[in-house]
Length: 201
Image 1 (cartoon, one colour):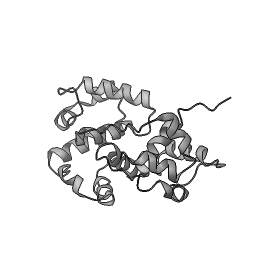
Image 2 (image 1 turned 30 degrees about the vertical axis):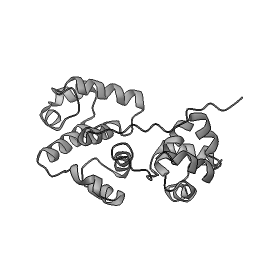
Image 3 (image 1 turned 180 degrees about the horizontal axis):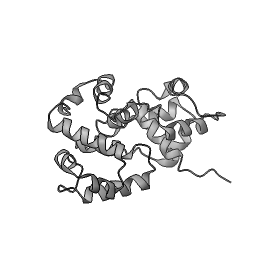
Image 4 (image 1 turned 60 degrees about the vertical axis):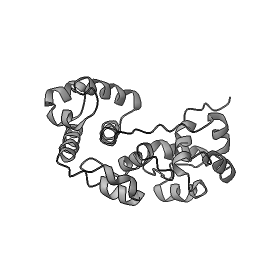
């Protein structure tokens, strides 16, 4: 990972100013795999502050004070509602919790599997799509070469970086990101950070 910024500065001149302005990549990994996947589900299609507020209210209602399988499986509908969790996500979280307790979802062996195998495994779980699997690969398993082509932030950043008229579709994202390999995860992180940079003038 330490070689990634130098590689990206060299291979992608359009990303170079972002890297120089933002500084070192600071991807923080989440070690508890169940908690991480549950958090990813909770944060789907929500802005960061709103998702964080819902997360904090939900965690406050759990006996472990964190997203743990036993607590989520036992939590009542009213407590989910009071935390602001939608009925759909409540179902997803309960399903993930029960599957984990029943050992039908096994997180331990994922480190030894390829990115494609992890995606195939996780997307078997109700409520976990490719975007969620990409986030898990990046922020839980620490995989360096994941390109989340379904992420609106990454696509918006690529539109800006490459001066496109409209958002790139997944196929165009893949083509434009070829110079980022084998560090597409780090490049994607810089894409997100680039959206926080104010244009001069």
